[in-house]
Image (cartoon, rainbow, N blue to C red; front, side):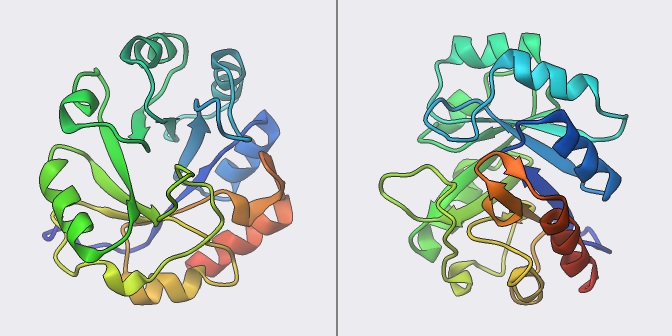
Length: 212
């Protein structure tokens, strides 16, 4: 990662539940779309809903499947039904668990201190990236809260994906401060959980592009 020269910050929209929102995101130039397969989320989709969304997508869009402490058989079955490109593990999954599937993965961490981020880079060194989110003892992401970006180390062996309370109001400042490989947003582009706002999506992308 240290040898890559980044010309722009990548964008992932997460928690999509409707094909029309996914298509709007792609039209705006969003790089990745996140589909949540965690029943505890208000943005969760079934394999059938996810497959219907994927059927509408053009080529060269990364589809990410998000899981939280799921049974390995469940993950494998969803991978069979839905054409995912990347897995995202947002619970308490071990490196061994994450590496057993046929697809590459990113690991999400809820950040309490800098040490746990550094440990995450070490433990999940085979991941394609490390996603950092706000700490909450009860929720596995989707809190709508940001965190202290100064906790993020400058030495990053893997691409860093910044999440947690991002919106058009703070994403440009976040990029300037953190210099992440990508930003990940869900609630900050919604009218209601799982229902994206075209206007908020447009404004978010514009703010990201204003920085690079």
